[in-house]
Image 1 (cartoon, rainbow, N blue to C red):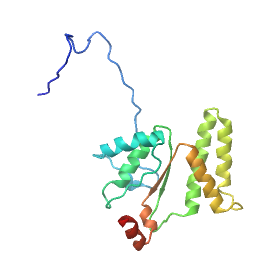
Image 2 (cartoon, helix red, strand yellow; image 1 turned 135 degrees about the vertical axis):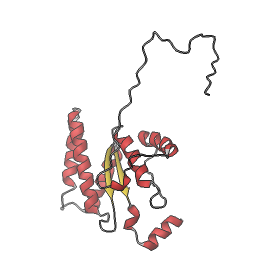
Image 3 (cartoon, rainbow, N blue to C red; image 1 turned 180 degrees about the vertical axis):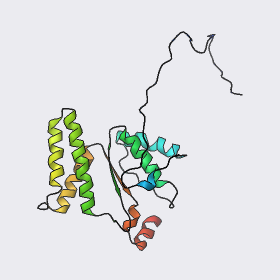
Length: 189
């Protein structure tokens, strides 16, 4: 039986005449991220400690990189999806880029994902009246498709923009891009 101990001389614990305070909390739809169906679970159980440690640091920018490792099927993608969706409600623009042996990560896929995210951010800035930032992001998004600019320069510009904004890049199944020998060496270091 639960017991409440109170160190006060008040007779009432709450005032029945005072209207209840309604706490507002933004609802979250925990849908799968585009291209990451394996990262979606209807009933997400556990990992509360990881979320409580990671979310505040990611929101504030104190933590900028998270690498989640573990056995296949242990919930890495689900945890990453959960964190991403929660950060999305805080104004982050998600950039999910899944990989597989059949669809490995490459610069063209990254540039396309960055361009899409920058166009979305430009629309958001424009809606808020920040036309200068909106124009900068729109130009950057177009430059990412410009074959006259080296891939290295385009990726450099994209990373600079990612660092200046509230973007969340999620590289799922990154290990599928590594050779088996490389994968073993990275995990053992």
